[in-house]
Image 1 (cartoon, rainbow, N blue to C red):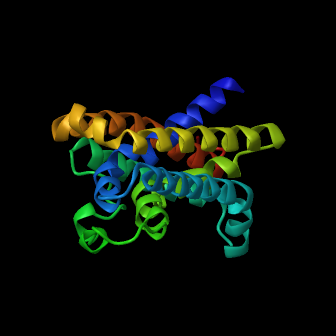
Image 2 (tube, rainbow, N blue to C red):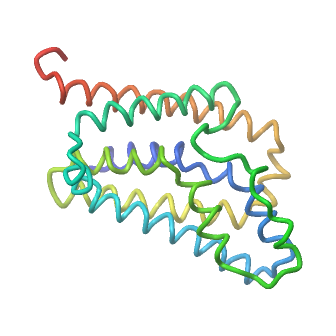
Length: 213
């Protein structure tokens, strides 16, 4: 059970990757008081946990409603995650998450604090995007009991708390690591993510072709 939670946390860690949203968080909360910056971080991380919880509990039902088999979704999701991993290892970032440059945060400077940016774009899609949601659905589709569901929810809670701590330390982390450090971290996470994606693909093939794999 403990090993399963650690594996899920690892997958969430490299997919959600709060370090990729640090610059956007700092820009979006420029001029905010410490209290308001904490509120934005709390709302963003609560959004992440709610998203993980929703797709953990309802993901498989959504697939059945759409007529998509678990094996097909595992295979498609694994390929998506592998492509993300390749881009991260090449230093190109996550291809299914938008560029931070695409978000205009200049209008927020000097404006009254708002929580809207905490949900979109900071939480969704900058921290948890299509790759993260797909992975949640894939893991939830493999559960066989309440203990395994709890493992995913516990992993989701852990990564949400980690994201909160990372956002609150955004300034210090950015100064400490710099662009080079963040780029190296992204490449390392890409390698770990590639291993996760291969496991997802193999499970999908095993589900679709039990006699071949």
